Amino acid sequence: MKGMEIKVTGHIIEKGVLGILFGALKDKKSDITDIEISISTLKGGWEEKCPSIMTFKLVSFEEEDLKRSYKEVLELLKENGCHLIYRKDII
Figure 1 (cartoon, rainbow, N blue to C red):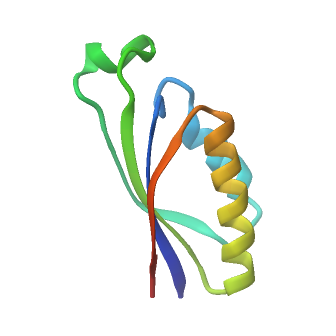
Figure 2: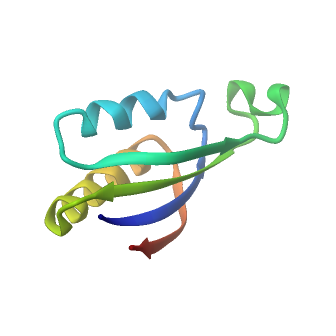
């Protein structure tokens, strides 16, 4: 299995980013695992006052599918105001 760990910041909960990513990957061979979302406080994160941070792993058995899915996931994150903090390849 191939994969990459990705960390982003943005208004993940408020903008429904998890549902958007699910819709994009639903019919693909890639998946997102080990999702962690942290927000400073409930009130601070609500109404897009303070962004949250999400770390997850994008995984697939096929390298080409992983690359295509990464491009699509990154584009969707950007479209929803999220910013990439880092990306690290994992085996």
